[in-house]
Image (cartoon, rainbow, N blue to C red):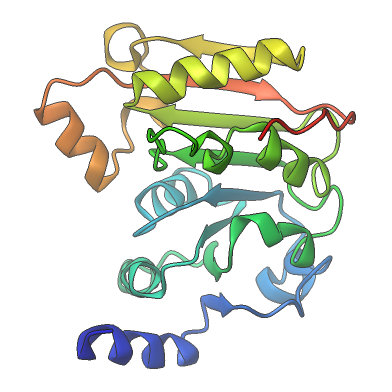
Length: 222
């Protein structure tokens, strides 16, 4: 590990807007961490926090948590939020498949997954954040009817997610093949992550699908 990363890992220990591998706020994020009763929304694999911070600016009446395991990325995210005075966003460093250690059932009101690794190699499908394996993880912490949003440039991940949603008979809320061709919703159109900007420059199509989780754990496909 490079010296720069070590410095960042040490620095984030003192950041008030980062929780690192600490389960003390399970069930009490709103009251004990944010000190309010606003709805709690999470962004999974948030990277440098572009989307979580962008949503927090648009919705000051809501709380946001960006979740990632990469400490150097969360260092950048937390620094940006601090510099811009965004106080209704925080960041949690942990593995996504351990979410039930950090959140109680029903504590989260909405989930965003923005430009995650599509894991295109053969045999890696179970690592996709919309795979049956991860949907089962989400069921442990989400109430039935909680909305999950995916925004991606990956044709393969978009198609795969549609197949999983159909096979599990989940309710689709919105399905947009080309966000920038047909939609002006500020959550989809105005907030752009670092990677999204690069994808748009490359002429890639940005896809979006949102669906509701159910209460039935389906058999996980490996």
